Image (tube, rainbow, N blue to C red; front, top):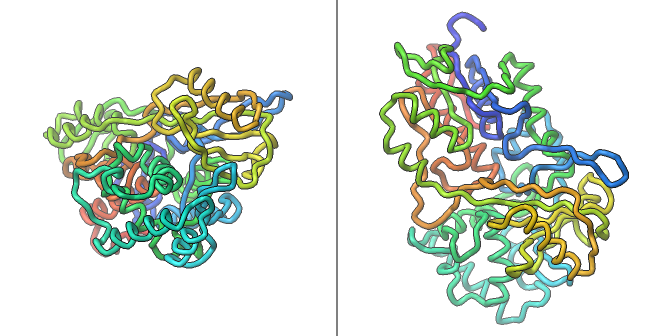
Length: 441
């Protein structure tokens, strides 16, 4: 470390932590990253599974989707050397079901793609299409704003039931991990504004689905780790931070001094460290304590057919809970492996697996279970009027992550933007004379 460089501890090496570390290193800080596990990526990471024939395959702890509106995430991936076209499969927004009905947008500029996709939606009547167009026009005229206590279902009052089923519910579950009856309408409108009506990013339409076709490690974490190591940052894996203390104008992380700390770990871990740090942060702790969490289950199964698209939407019932199915053979994975995604499911792994296998059989797919992964706290519960904890905790101590107060739900883009904003705010306070401020990528 060069004399005079300010030391920054980043606690957590998920996407937020890695984004913060990259931005801080670029800004000239001496960065040390502490990660409790021995793997980069946090809740968006790869895992190894055994296939029936004895071979091993790399899958993910959950099936993730990016969209073209992820401005900062895509730019950061490029900065650390990721070739986006090699790790992401681009698909115009498509919420098509196995029977071919549903919504599919063309690869046109927004909002022409949305308008044409709505007009051409299969299985929708003229009344369905006019219902959606009138609601979308009303949302846009109101600046994509609504009262703080509205749910998405309240926002969509009067919308055609078929459109609610085929578009709103799948989009709401995919973005907010909650059904429309519970989800925050304001956050949903922000997703609609940026995802359906936003400008293109990195040459891709804002609404384009960008589905990883490589394991999640290759999509960003591994490249970010290499970039940080080459830039002189220190990555400490298997190092769970036990204590955080303010002392003599600096921060002691397990007794080691730093000029500032960014908590990029999950909210419950950040809460643990702040609560025992001795700093007066009652309001922040109350907000963090008030967050609920929602699970996501991914059921990997073998013996499935090749699907007409890499991703299909599924019609759900209480006993058929999967909202989406992904054909891993079209996404760089083994042939015959399907990934069924169940958001906001309270069932345990055994029960959700049983339900999904029955759901697949009802579609004519007699698949066999391979691996079921349940992330019990995959996202925070993005309910109306939610008070999320802020970025600033104490001087020199900040939090970032998808749960921190911001306009987005628990998404990778929300995590990355939160991290970049934290480093930009921190950099202004730590910047020595003669050095320019960091800029968000």
